[in-house]
Image 1 (tube, rainbow, N blue to C red):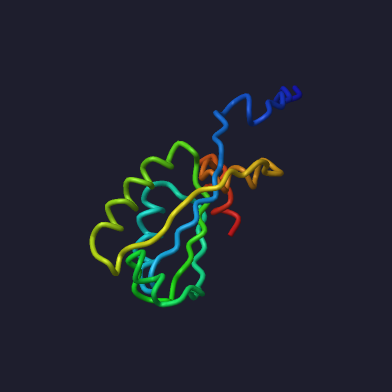
Image 2: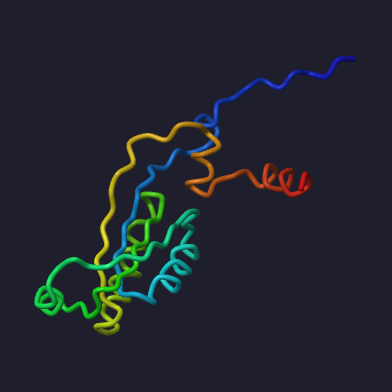
Length: 137
C-alpha cells in the first residue's frame, strides 16, 4: 500500500506570525556581553556586538551623562511582543550607574524573505526540525 501523501500546510496557517523588530542599543565599552546575555534569556535569537566610538565633543557626553567616547553597539532582532520586557530590562540597567547608561530604540522590519529565515529570527524553529539537524551533524 502506498503511504498517504502529507498535505502541505503553509507555516502561517499552523503558527502565529510575530512581527520582528531591530533593537539598537548604544552603551559604554565593556557592557555589551552582559546586555546580550540578558537579551538571549528573553528569547532574542540573533544579536551582533560592534565596537564604536562617539563623534560628539566631550561637553556633549557630559551633558547627557555618558562618560566614554568608546562605545559598543548592539543590533538585536527581537519579536515585537518582547519589546516591553526589553525596555524594562534596559531602563533598570541604565539607572544602575553612569557607566551603565546608554541609548536604545527599535526599528520596524517590513519584510523577511523565506520561512527558514523567519523561524531563525523569531526563535520559532520546530523542535523536531532542530533534532533532525542535530542528527545530521
